[in-house]
Image (cartoon, rainbow, N blue to C red; front, side, top):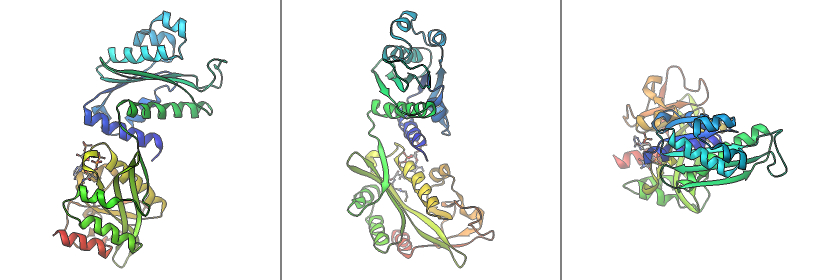
Length: 331
Ligand SMILES: CC(C)(COP(=O)(O)OP(=O)(O)OC[C@H]1O[C@@H](n2cnc3c(N)ncnc32)[C@H](O)[C@@H]1OP(=O)(O)O)[C@@H](O)C(=O)NCCC(=O)NCCS
């Protein structure tokens, strides 16, 4: 998943959790911000509309930007993006707006406003309005993409959401604290320690917000008995209770699946709620003829990362023994 997609997913989770609808008013990005956020399934719940106002006339007609402001400040200026954001809120049913206007190049730059100058504004209906000017590097495409990233990251800043970064777990990271807080027993944190100590953790990622670790996901080796040894089991995944429902768990799962794919893992199994895991492409494992040792049925799910890595006749999936112990301990 690229940076824009990751940001868009976080924006989606935050807007949804807060019940806010978004409107975009875009010039140099030509609708790129709207495109990025509407890639996400279900975006109609929190994305209201997007204005692509490339010409000055359209900025006036669609957003109510004042001709005298355009004349005085020029289309790429903070006063104009502020008027664009305010106009977008006025001419939509959204509560929060992003406005972008810039010079993507290669022509159009001046000494005062060189190519790469991008003005942005974030505004909430009847509330705060913040604008800034950025000088972005790169060719036309890079400037447009970077402007989209800045627009989305700026929206999270504006909403007071600290960006979350995902990285590989390092020795000394206190992931046990996450599992203790998220699960009712110590079992999960013990299993994580055992799997890591035995070198059986294929992929282990943490989510960091500032200096704090707020989430963790682990993928350990799993096989289809007698047939394939290139599988992984996703478990456990946890996010600090006070940080849940902000898209962190989903970001960890997606980043983990990407890392498994890069590591050549053929398929990933999980015992979990289908409502949560279907969104990442997991399907019922029974539909692929796969069984497990724990009697789990609908909640036993699989995703095939490498085509044909699940044998046509299916088989019995075996997790690392440490993980089996966790399931039996919890009864
Ligand atoms: C499961 C968990 C990791 C999700 O993390 P998160 O950061 O809250 O997840 P996101 O914000 O990315 O996604 C939240 C969405 O998942 C849904 N969801 C979360 N946990 C779910 C569950 N157990 N079953 C079904 N849906 C679930 C939420 O309802 C929400 O749906 P929405 O987007 O439609 O509103 C977190 O809730 C957690 O730590 N739970 C306790 C530990 C646990 O049960 N882990 C899973 C088993 S190993």
